[in-house]
Length: 424
Image (cartoon, rainbow, N blue to C red; front, side):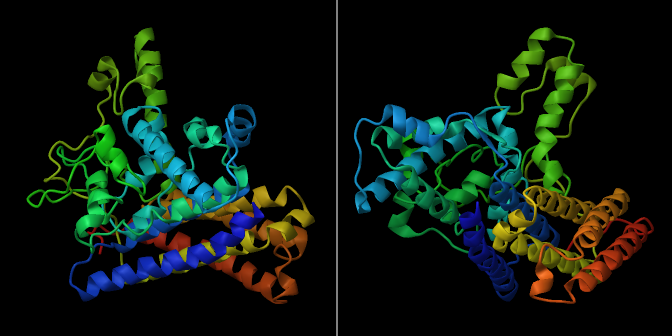
């Protein structure tokens, strides 16, 4: 937990700078692929995912150490070879997990957030799930376990394997020659994120593209078919927490609504997007018919509002960075504080993105979030020990929370008087 938090302290600023660089580069080349509100939503999603991971909010039914202890046929010694084997095993496991998430109605919920953006850029890579609380796919690491790859090697390689999937979420890199035959490139991944009929559910590879070629899921990016991005049942919100649970919530409602007991069970194991026939008729859900003719999600924006959203995102990044850098100290104060702090981060993301959607309910969420923050300040007469570094911190944070509530109320009421405008 603490080690991963410190890794993220380095990774998060690097990812943010690369996201901003891509926006600047697109502006300079007059080929903008990064919309401000979409980018902020992606950054907010990234915050929720890494917070969940650092807090360890997951239940593993079968652990990798258990597989190694009970099933290993041999034991690889620590060498370059064992790290190569671990990397390949992780990538093969990632391919099959990814494929199952795309073709299974139930497991799609754990991946939908990653495809929810109607843009395609580096920020999209940060859209990772918080809904996959129960991890059942460790079984796909069976090849590594059989070879006796040590747990410590997997723990080192796994973050590297994840971070290596960031760079190819871009429209600014064209095809890459012979590398297209070996690794996943931006061209391959543009196909994967596209909802064009020709591209849908293709290119599941994470680092190596040859898995797709071997297992029949490969599709080249075609010169005459420009990828269109998103999901066929659009999320229509900037709120990553809502997006994470939209699909499973619809499945739960469909289970209740259908009159067929068979369908109540069937819809959970069917292919992605399946709904009982009687429910489709009575409770239709918008689905994109023509991917070349639909309106992307947009909300009211003004330069002032976007500036306020950036202030809030930077504040959230400060809070989450403090958490990651001071896990041991926060745990020392009270072992429950880290989970209260995590709840505060999630409330912060929800309140901001609800405001980005133009909802009046953002006022209530901001009041709850700021009340919790002020509560920390009152109970501790501090902010988890930050006063030892900055004596005035508690007064600065108190003023920030009061200001945040006031500004949120102002913007929420402001939007009720303005027509919807296209985002910029």
